[in-house]
Structures are given as C-alpha cells and as structure tokens.
Image 1: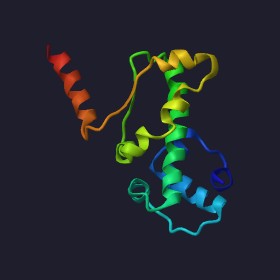
Image 2: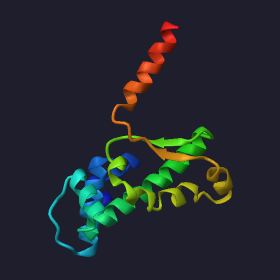
Image 3: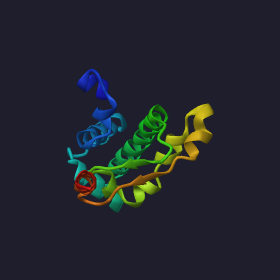
Image 4: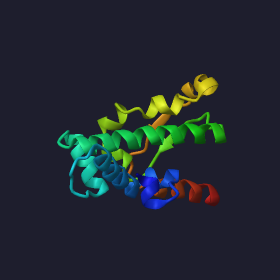
Length: 143
C-alpha cells in the first residue's frame, strides 16, 4: 500500500510520525475498514486506550518495524553499550511499546541473535534530552 502511494518506501517513511499515519491508513485499507484519517498523536492515544483496533495494529506494526531497523543499526555500528530510542512518538506508546514485538524483532537476526540479546535497549522519555547532551558537551569544552 505504501509503495503504491509513495513509490519508494524507506525506513524513515514508515517509522516516523507521518509513517505511523501512513501505516494506519494502509492497515485500514488492507482490512477494508473505514476509519477517519488520524494524526500520530491520535493514533497513539486511541491505541493506548484500546478504542481503535486499527490504531492498535498500526502502533504494533510501527514498533515491530522499528525493532527490525534498530537491530540492523546496532549490528552496523556495533552498539554494545545500548540502543536508545528517542523522539516524540515512541514515549507516547507507553505499555504498548513494552508489550510490542520491538525487542523480539531487534534480536531476530539469525546467527547474530545472541550478540544482539546482550545489547540493552531503552526509550528516552526526558523531553529535553538534546539539551542535556549539549550541556554535557559544553561542560567538557569549558573544562
């Protein structure tokens, strides 16, 4: 569905705010369910409330896809210290993220599964994490 709509579908196309909205629309279309177009924040909220099966499925698919990509990135960069998910969307998922297939898909890399199982993953929930990092860098420069 996304390929028909956009042509090329990158990871960023699917695992972003607009990507969550596109996944929601695609799932509804594939399942033949008439739902209103929703913004990412609404999809997150309705999924968490359990009031919309399409929203729940879109969040589940988003988390699974994010896990696959995060596992690839962890392998690419040998991220033994951990993979930290930041941004405005995933922290809104709350318990749905913890219960999702993120971690299973993160580790599902065949012969690299054991390697990935040892890499911790976490969601950053601090609203100003970028500024904390900038502050730390500035402090090192002054020292």
